[in-house]
Image 1 (cartoon, rainbow, N blue to C red):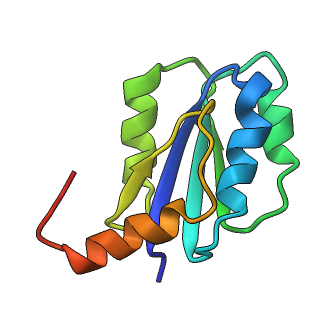
Image 2 (cartoon, rainbow, N blue to C red; image 1 turned 180 degrees about the vertical axis):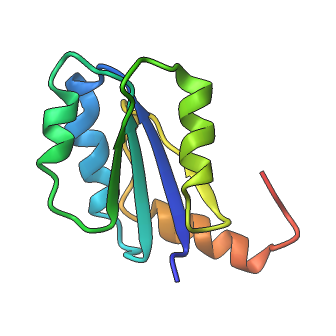
Amino acid sequence: MIEISIILPVYNGMRYLKDSVNSVISQSLTNWELLILDDCSTDGSWEFLQSLQDNRVKLFQNETNKGLFYNLNFLIGHSSSSLIKIWAQDDIMYSHCLHEFVHFHKIHPEIGF
């Protein structure tokens, strides 16, 4: 069972994308999925994403640019976990971030945010 789904909408984010994705892949918690939707990038983002070799990463690509809110809703709809972390292409995740996030929600299931 997937403990947490990380959703990442991407549009021309190549400048930061490699560091952002690698910070998720190198998490101490390993039972996650990273869903990425490329919104018609023209900067090599899609080509980089296709080179990823981690089966926890699920890629999607729009045929036309649809914008952030469509992309977020699409990714949430394809998530396997009820616990979702919204991620941005220029964010960096500390190595224990997902572990702490999941741990907090296990201790406090009555809290949602």
